[in-house]
Amino acid sequence: MSETLQASDLDARGAEYYPAQLPHDAVEALRTLADQLPASRAGVRLTGGGALSSLLGPVGSIGRLARTIQGEAAQPVRIVLFDKSAAANWMVPWHQDRTIAVRSRCDVPGFGPWSTKAGMHHVEPPFGILAAMITLRVHLDDCDADNAPLLIVPGSHRLGRVPAGETAACAQSFGHVVCMAQVDDIWAYATPILHASERARRPSRRRVLQVDYAAIDLPGGLEWLGVDAE
Image 1 (tube, one colour):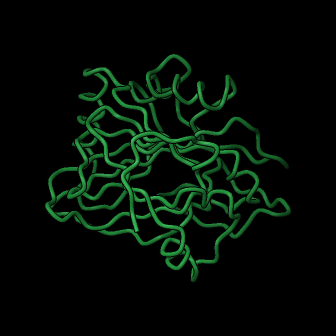
Image 2 (cartoon, rainbow, N blue to C red):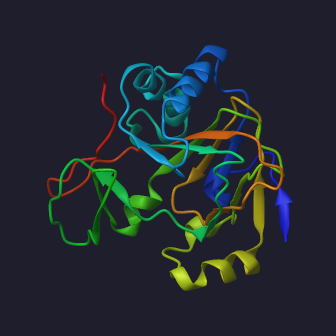
């Protein structure tokens, strides 16, 4: 079963909807950035710089919301831009985000396996680190039920690691929420929540900037990749 969620408790359900968060000029700047990236890829990992870093920082429209949720220590630690369209209309099965991006490889007990994505070091951390993170999805286009909205399983962020072979059954058992949005809206969700995205039924452009935030440091010499200031 599914339901349409208009607002929720981030702690209890794992997601919350924040309408009308970005000024028009910020939306246009992010759209311009999206137009400069390869359109054929499902998601492009970014390192920040310029106007993007300003938006994600403490006084930016996106960064202020993260600090409201996580506190003054909130910092952006990974950025991905998705640009779904009729020409690039992919689907994503039920899954949890389980890796973080770090500056360099440093073998620390409890962290692994390691991988490299777009030249960036990624590693699966202990689940407690993921559980302390939030993800903000910033909508640069309207996203109705036909334009591949994010789907989430409420409360699944409290289940710990869900084996990959059990994610679809978990979603079927618990039910899911449809996270529709309009341009300049932001959805916040607990990073390890079970989520998915279908192919758009009536595809039009659906650009989303996805930013992970953390308010804790990593142990053993590991450092968040973070966001470049320039």
